[in-house]
Image (cartoon, rainbow, N blue to C red; front, side):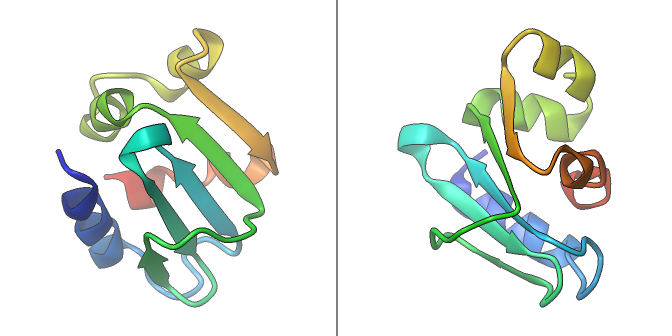
Length: 96
């Protein structure tokens, strides 16, 4: 799945107020997705986020499709969370 495809799918799921925070998904060299939950916007522009999730594109795709459990990914170091952990726990609604 490409960055553009993921961005488009998230844009369809994120509604204003769905997540009352800003979240950045950092895919390293593959780019990033910035979600402003209050405004209901999804972009590929960098910004200060309440919560930053660092994950590879492959692991993100597995996570979004349900093939990778978020807790397992976190424990194995495949997913790293910086900032507000409570925000990360609320993200299931926009992942799929």
